[in-house]
Image (cartoon, rainbow, N blue to C red; front, top):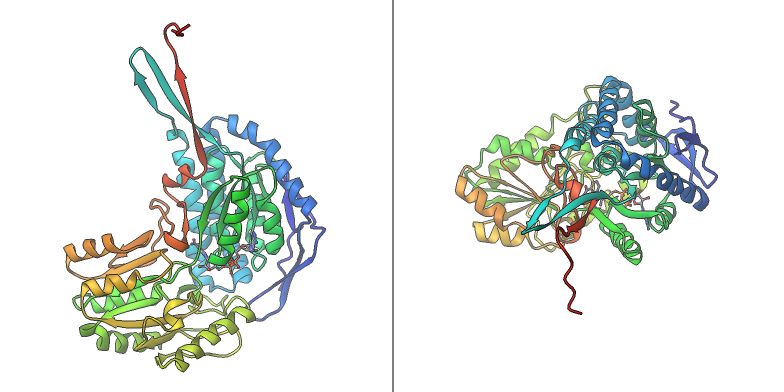
Length: 479
Ligand code: NAD
C-alpha cells in the first residue's frame, strides 16, 4: 500500500520536501511502511512562519464573507472526496473505515462550514459614553501554530484552522509524527478552494519540531491537542513569549450511572465512551461509576454486547474495532491491563490481546487509587467502580487532576442537572456520551486544558479586542 504524498511539507502554497530526519508512516494494521516523509528543519519551520506572517495582513483585510466562502468551498470539496479521504485517514491512523467515513473528515468539514457561516457575524461593540463614545474591534492575533495528536488528525487540523482562519489569522500546523498525511490534504484542498498561498502551512516532525514552532518569533498563538505532560511543556514555552494558548489535553473522565438509568442506553454510552477508535479518544468516560443496584445487570449486559464486536481489517466496512496506533502504545495499554490485574481488579472481559489488537477490556471492583482508575490509558480499557449515593459519586468523580469531560445517566431530571453542575469538567453529557457537535464548545478544566474549540466561543481564543475611545468634544487640560 502506498500513501506517499507529493512532498512532506506545504509552505507558502507549495509542496516542499523536508530537509530534516526521516519520518516513516506505518499502517497500524499491518505495520508496513506506507509513506516516508522528512521532518522540517528549524529553518524550514521559520520559513513557514515567515510565509504565514507575510500572508496574514492581506488575508485579514479581506471581507469576512470572502474568507467564509473559501472555507465553505473547502468543506464542500472535503465532502465530495470523503470516501478517498476516509481511506487515507484509515491508513494513517488504523481506525476502521466505518468510523473515518462518518466521524473524521465530516466533522472537520462541519467546523469549516460552521465558521464560514459565522464569518459575517463577527463584530465589535458600540459603547455610549455621553457625548463621547467608544467601540471595540475584534482583531486577529496573527500567526497561529496548531499542533495535533494522532487520534483524530484531520478533524484536529480543521477544528484549529477553521476559527483561526475565519478571524483573519494564518496558521502553521504540525500534525502528529504518527499521522502526518491528512493535514497535507487539507492544505491542498484550501488552495483549491481559493485560499491565498501562505495562509495555511504544514510542517512535519516530532516533538523538537513542535518546540521550534512554539517559540518561533512570528508565532502569536499556540493551540495544542496532546497529552498533559506535552501541554505543560508547550504552555511553559509559550508563556516565555506571552503567547496566547489553547490546550486540549488528556482526561480520565467519569461516567456516572444511577440505578434508575435506562440500562440499554447506559451500556451503549459506556461502549461508545470507551471503545470507539479502539479507546484512543481524549474525552472517553473511562471511569464508569455504577450505583450498587445497577452494577450487576450493567456488567452482565456489557459483557454480552461486547462479544459482538468485530475486530480486524480496518478497511473492511464491517470492522468496528481496529488496531492500536503503534506497538509502543499497545505495550503501554497492556502494562495498564496487567497493573489492573495485579492490583486485584476483576477482569470482566477482554485482556491484553495479540499484536496490534487489544480487545474491549472491562474491569470491575476497582478502587479509586488503582492506576487503572487514576491514569489516562488511551486504549480500550474501561474501569468500573461502584457507589451508593449521589454525593459520593460526585465527590469521587471529581477526585482527579483531569477535568475534560463527564457524563451522567439517570431518568431523574433534577438530579441530572444537579450532578452536572457539581462535576468539574469542561464538557458534560446527560443520558448520552461523546457527542461533540461543532455548535457546542469543547474543552477541559483543571489539567485537561484551557480555551475552547468549536462554537462561537472558539473565536475568543483566536482574536483580541482593541478598544477605541472617540472624543467628540474639546480636550480640557488642567494647565
Ligand atoms: P503527545 O502529547 O505525545 O503529542 C501531541 C503533539 O505534540 C504531537 O504533535 C507531538 O509531536 C507534539 N509535541 C511533543 N512534544 C512537544 C514539545 N515539546 N513542543 C511542541 N510540541 C510537542 O500526544 P499524542 O500521544 O499524540 O496524543 C494523545 C494525547 O492527546 C492523549 O493524552 C489525549 O487525551 C490527548 N488528546 C486530547 C484531545 C482534546 O481535545 N482534549 C484530543 C485528542 C487527544
